[in-house]
Length: 434
Image (cartoon, rainbow, N blue to C red; front, side):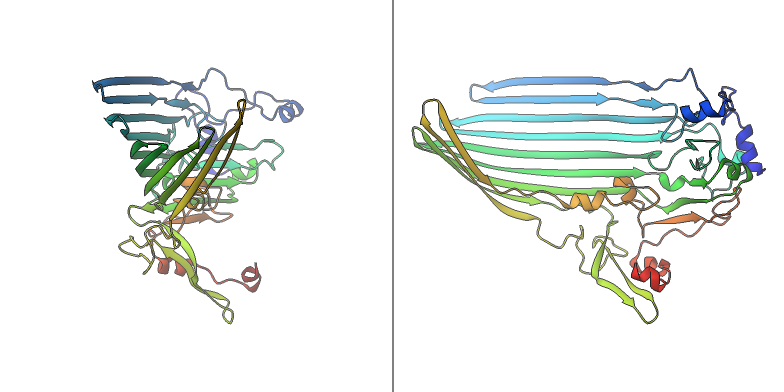
């Protein structure tokens, strides 16, 4: 019996219960059918929602109106079972909330000319933090200086634990979150001229998306069976080193002109033209990477990758790829979009409408946020764990439970394409074919 595993099996929570409780349902058939053999009672998840709204409407004059809106919400949630697993001792607190403020001003300049201005601010936050009743060092685990209890995964292949067993802090969303700020300003001028109703407008939007990811201090250890866990035979595991925080920025601009023209009493034509600039996403410190095929090279004679193809954002002061943009986008992010609409009323009770328009969207968000960094990480928190700014540390099969990742911490990732290139292993012909 491995001494670390024995310590886990003997460890008790502050309430006196064992961290890993003994079976309460001892009939193996019943336990298998139910999918569990321990029932935990007397614990509850809590969710509190507080909301507040303020509305102010002020008539500055007969021709000038001002409206102010403010909304705030705070909804903390506590889950006694945390992000993963079904054991107590690792409760998770999710701090979430939002604030929305807006100012709207409408001024009648002349009987035929109206000016409207809008300004707004939105803040969203959601940060999850997992507590722990037991320190890994108290059980004799060396996690290269990390004081965060690891996630323990015992596979479902063991018939004695039909649904497997997971417990710990959980690196996938154990200590991570997002804080988003958005500022917006828009203005519209409406002018009625004979049969024409003309509209001119513009808007500006600035977004800050800050990802705080502390999962570089959280490790995951895998075991094939419960017996392997008891004996300390690790099947594998992963951890990360480096800084996984990201501070994304983007600006969006738009302008339009629109003419609503009443050709006849029963026929109205609307013609419009809009210009949009979907400012690409950049990272405050240039910690964005992409793949550029022109930078990739492979030597078939030696079966090695001689150029990784990795491209780093141009605003990275230390390792930016020459000629690369701050967002790594290479195509234009703007366009002119015509709009046409027709409304025709041939009969008193019949109206026919038709329209055509072009629209632009920020499609690159999919490529920024969707890919994972491996080991089950995905979405915005997985992207921040990708090389070369964060490097994975792998626990080899058979590594001792006392020091699954060794006893010496690896150097922090340099964050350069050259450093990433040096980590690429030589590929076999089979691997290169794949």
